[in-house]
Length: 171
Image 1 (tube, helix red, strand yellow):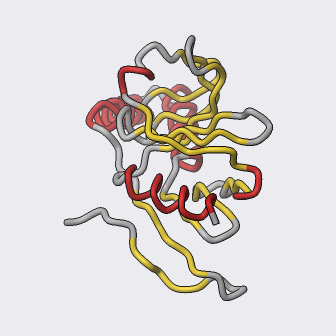
Image 2: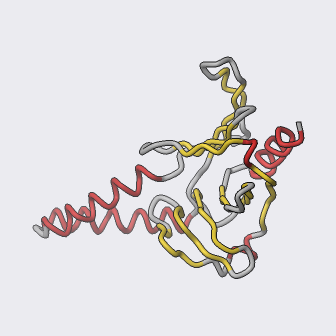
């Protein structure tokens, strides 16, 4: 099955929109599966309070997991169950792919590191502070905002997102 972004129609105001799929990497799948198994085990064996707390944490993490990215002529959006995050294209300075080697020494400052993805605040010695909306530890796309914020996305097809976004930024 191809993960190529596809034309999905028009937004309410008539603008064209593209959608970019995301998928969890194996580490995130394993971490998520282990936490789910632990939660079910706690609940099944009578550890009700810790099981409920862990279940609540899982629901919250799932709600903030990036579900997909969308791109219109005016906005780049991270779609999540608990509220989308949109970035005005007029405020994006540049977009580029980043090699996984450059991201290896990234540290979580206030972030989720594998449960349904990798999202939140991260710090990297060479790239500085970043906000990740990622589901994998590969396919990195760095979006630099005009106010110097750095946003990290991980679409299944990073080259396509970079090409489409670069085309819109150049227009």
